[in-house]
Length: 81
Image (tube, rainbow, N blue to C red; front, top):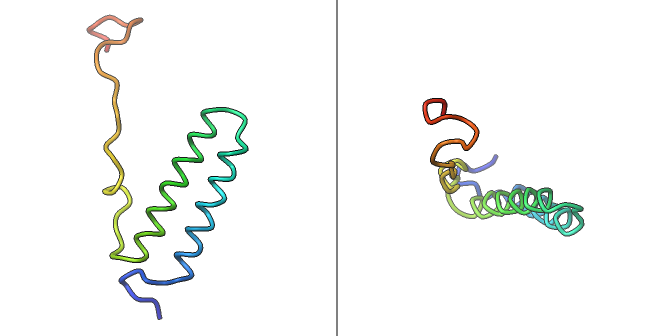
């Protein structure tokens, strides 16, 4: 039976395999946007792999806050932004 502490070696191997696959896809990506997405996924997979060694974490809590653009939209008026 699996422990709630998240110490399953199969789960860690799975996430590390996904991380390596994403890094390979990033290396072979044709565009910068695809490369960035694969690197971001690799980072998330690394977090999942490391969380199997310690306590399980809520991935949403471990990620940095989103970046939102501030100010008004150049094509919209201030009242529309």
